[in-house]
Length: 240
Length: 48
Image (cartoon, rainbow over all chains, first blue to last red; front, side, top):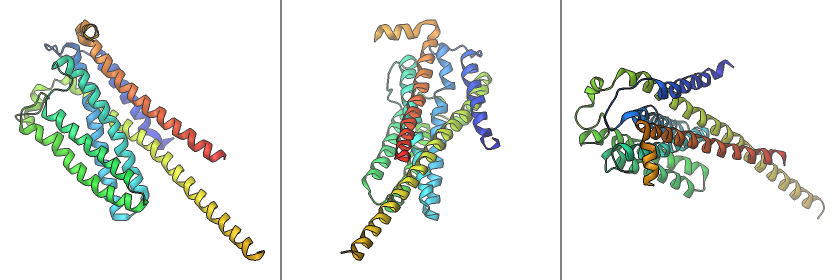
């Protein structure tokens, strides 16, 4: 039970975020109005995605250092969940942008950067699917994964800051962000970052455990097959 | 589509927030259901 304290924490944080996010008073701004509450649900998806991709890259490095296939498995599943969060981030961003900026996909450096980033990670899964040998697949995709992460972060965090962007905190100096983010927002958005990330790890953990069971079953089946084959061979030898 | 957009804009655009939350929850649910169906597959393999 003590091992699962972080799951209880996830539930508590998410309950707080969803309830307070809908009910607490927020700054009154033109155009946005109540839609400002989307700041509690849209950016945390991206933070969770980036954290999980960082985890995925770390496990790829770990795989390359130690050569355990289990590390590769964790790395893939982290990327998988991260992609889910990214897709959700894209859809929610689209909905929000339509009502705040007037376009489903505004020509913004951040949105375009993220589109390229998502394609990078889709290519990661295509690459994995195209290699049959387990060890080779793990090695090649681990190397690719590290490169993908190294490209993804500049694409969505650094490049949008160098130009003008519709997203707040981009274009100009994001270091002054502390003056234009209201406390009533920070109070909810920061726990939301943690809560969404923890939920991402929770979902990933379920899939990792499932995949471990699957690979164990595969191994068992192969063992049974080889044993039955050998015994059949023996029988053929003894009574021809 | 336009009518829907108008409805979403009512009440200070709070329905936009509702739509966003709906998308997020539906996405999580979809993923969890997929994990569930995969668990079922493993279960069938174990029974065999």
